[in-house]
Image (tube, rainbow, N blue to C red; front, side):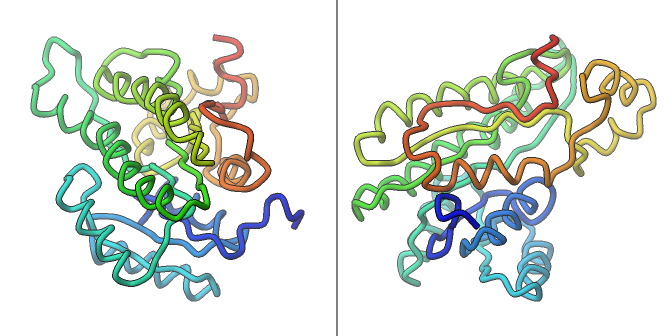
Length: 255
């Protein structure tokens, strides 16, 4: 591996990583040499994923905490401090989706999506950045956005608002933390085959729409995001700050 992309000696925390895109990000970072911390709220599933990666020879640990709960986040970071774990790379991946027309949308569900997809990135990043600044060695924060950080679709208003917020939160992080050699950037995945999108992949009409509206004529695969994650986590991106990279097969290019 080219030394610019070598993550040996670095520790990465990936939120929402017991499965799906988060787990794929964690595997990509581990393959690039990073020690990886998986996170989730479902303890059994989380530690199955930890065990799965450990059997492949990766250095992996797991922490159960709710990224949308301030007390839970702060407790987890205190525990990491006590164990001597220092986070060099943070991937804010945790997220949920809720589909409903706005005129039928309950405030409770609006708030849950905003908290899980946007507020969580603020909470976890705040705690990670405090420690990065104190150590004085810089760091990387990578927020996971979406195509809806750029373009809206019907029935996903809270998700769209949250992911649009992720784009601007990333810029705010870059503005405040750049002076400490912390680079904050975001990734906007396109239509990727994941657990969250299973129903859409199996919907013949939606499946055809995705394929017909994308220059690649196909869905993306989770592993096709690994290169961008590694790049933004590595020294190769040390002067890249406040940016959002869309990995969408060209979908936005022809929108």
